Length: 217
Image (cartoon, rainbow, N blue to C red; front, side):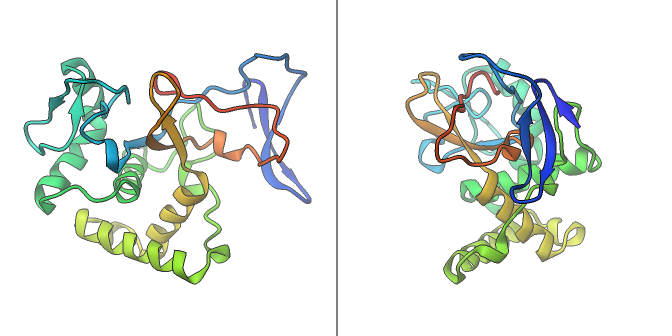
């Protein structure tokens, strides 16, 4: 399976990953992928647009949940499909949960909307990424369980549609594969997102590529 300049492969020692399909030049874009699901960091929910993730001095508040903030109606309209269920859940719960819970819920809502199918821009479905829960220490597993409990309160329908094991898997893959989103200057992390294809790039202690975030990609 290929995507642009990279292809999916399974290595005997490294496992599943991405590799270049041709020689790449310095400064060339290896892979560009739109975020599958993304949320603003807890500490910046009132300072960053929840659609384009740009820092703004004056943001417009969602009149229904009074949590989400946007640059203008254009950003709000662009994000409504993602925010619709989130908006209802926040109003029902009475407050917005932490960023991990918000991201996990958005991911599962989108998976339901997409009927579990990967889009053309994805090399693998988002929920088929590795979670590595078996490698987490006991204290981290307790944090995952707390997030699972919070999500079940936040989204009342989750327990009817998904097992706790599946929800734990979602939190595990976010912990392993979630990437920080930076502001327009690239200087501060303002959000957390999931990019399924990019998550397949294996770690290297001497990397020859870097990740940047621009206009949702």
